[in-house]
Every structure is written in structure tokens, then in C-alpha cells.
Length: 233
Length: 233
Image (cartoon, rainbow over all chains, first blue to last red; front, top):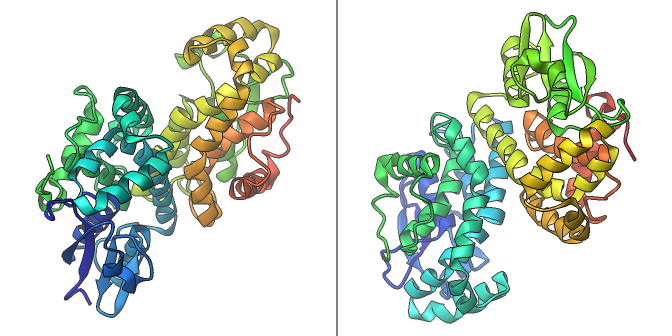
């Protein structure tokens, strides 16, 4: 079924800039399983282009007659459909634990990074996406972009505190999943790749060695697809 | 080797009140492996009583000629020493993921709960432990007990936000480890048991159903040892 797989992937004003952390989950999961997909640049406001999926967000994966949206659902689909490829989750109970990493990343880490990089995201978006992005993000953060710019140092300090469990885990082992990455690493690293592609801000202090080293390993993984990604800045 | 296992276990003024979250990690891990240990009530300031372990904190587990301290080290010891008993960690990569849950619990969840319950902990400690506890905790939190009492509502609101990844994970599955608990559940639930034993504060809102239900399952697990625990209040 993998022939002709297609992934709708969030893009900036420069369509080569692919910054969505959720789309990176899927791109790394595909790479982990040695599957390839043609990516289709998509902008936030192009709702009609993915209306066939029954909703309005990416990633959306088309695989033959199958259409799957939501990065977690896509990972579960890939795992079920391509069981002979390297596993994204390992055992059933490991799969359950990866869920916690995914929830922590989405619900704790993403908001903390978002408060730091949101102004840079606004700047690199296609013009037609900017009003949508500003309105939805100011509502989600309960503040204005102007206020976020002024509070960036504080947001960066908060982020570095939020990262502590990831930092100390990765001081004890090369990857969240141990000696090699799995979907837990794809998800958590996707947050760093989001920032790397879209913002000039240095998220990690120079002496944050365990997180720095893990990011380097993830940038190198799967033939270096994350490192090769086009950056907006 | 399990005959005669002994666990030094933190106690309150009433020595039947055992409140340390780290000691609960070990007690649940022992129960998971169907191993029993005689517990020895220990207070914070009784450093000489565990000096044989080369450090000054509990849990300390004595198993035959082996002396192990630090709840994570004890779990790894039990897993290695009693491999035929039910596994605490499952696969190697699952073990690595449990590490993240343990780090998140210790570094994010414990401070958030501690800010809510620290005044109650002070009240239930043995008189001889109180000055030690107040000094070390006020330093760790960077505030006074008086200020913590006054900021309790805010601390509770913060805690409930911090719990979001645990909440949404447990909305999707019965335990962190999936259909049955493992050491990830022991660790995360140990934080709730800490509060349950030592504080009258209701940590969870009445409509926080996924966390409430998981706590009930953990209270019932292993013959209900957590539910049967003596409470200070």
C-alpha cells in the first residue's frame, strides 16, 4: 500500500519550510518504518484542500484507499498496517507509556515552547495564514503577541524548567525509548524541530548537554532528515 | 533471598502513618512482585539508624546481605534479583520509558503536590522532625510555610494543570502501563498516596473522572494495600 502515500504537511510562506511538530511526528514515524510519502505543502487556511478528511488539520495521510488524520492515529495506523517494519511502539504496555510522552509533549511542552516562538511563527507564515494564526493563538494563550514578545525571557526560563524530566531522563539513556528511538522520541523531538525550523531563538542553554546531545542524535537519525529540513531563519 | 527483607519506611508522629511517596514506590513494587518486607518506621532526623546504607534517606531495603537505597535503584534491584516474579518494567525500551514517568513524577508532579500539602505534612510529623522539615522545604520551595498556606488555592489550580498529561493518558487506558499497572503506575500513584495519607485536601476536582478512577484502581490493586494505609487525618 505504500506506493503513492501522500502526506499533507504544514508549510510557511516558503513552501519548503515544514514546521508543524505533529507533521514531524508522522515524517519521523514514516522514516522509522522506512516508508516514504510524497508531501503536499498545506497552509492553515486551506481547509477546503483537506475537506475530504472530514476535518481541518494536518497531518493527513493518504495511503491507497485509506485516509487518516491526527498524528497519533496515523502512527497507530502505520503500526497496524506495516507490522513487519520496525515497530513504533514495541509491546502493548510500551505503547501505553508512549501515550504519556505524547500527552506530556502536546499538553505541557508545546504550550511552553509556543510561548517562546509564537512571534517567530507569525513572521514566517504565508500572508493568508497570519490573521487566522494570530486570532487562534492569542485566544489559546490568553494573551497578545505583543505581550508574548515582551515576556519572552520569562517564557524561556519557564520552558527550561518544564524540560527537566526530559533532561534528566536523557542524562541516563540515549533515547526516551532506550538505546534507539521510537515514537516517544519522534514526538518529543518534534517539538524541538518545530522551534528549530521556525525560530532563531536558542531554546537550550549551552550547558544543557543531555538535551543537546539527544537533539543531535535525533537530527542525525534516519539519514538526517530532520537536520536537512529547510529553516525559515 | 526474600525471607527477612526489611524496608526502612518514613513515618509520621504516629508511626503507623507511612507517607513517603518514594517508600510507596517500593511498597507497591514489592507487592507487584508478591514479595513481602518487614517495614521499620523511620523519621527524617534518624540519620544514624540508616547510616549503614552510606546515606541519609529512605527507602532503604535490606535483602539478605544486600543493602539498597533510592527507590529507583531498589526497583532495578528487585527486577534483576527476582526475574521470575511479575515484571516491574517489561522490555528494555519500556524500562526506559518508565524512567521518564519517574522523572516527571519526581521533578514536576511532586513539587506541585508539595506546594499544596506541605503545611499538612509539617503538622503530622514527629516533633523531632519538624524543624528539619521546615528548614529544608522552605529552602527547596523558596518560600515560607506561611506563604504556602496563603497560596494554597493557587497551588491547587497549578497542580490540576500539571496533571493534564496524566489525566488525558488515563482517559485513554486503565493504567499508565496499559491494561495492568507496572512501576510507572506505582511511581505516579505514589504521589497521590503521599497526599492521601498526610493531608485532608482534596487534590482532584469531583469531575476529574479519569484520574479519580485510576486512583481507585490503584487503591484496590495488590489486595488494597494503599487503601488500607493508615491516614494522619
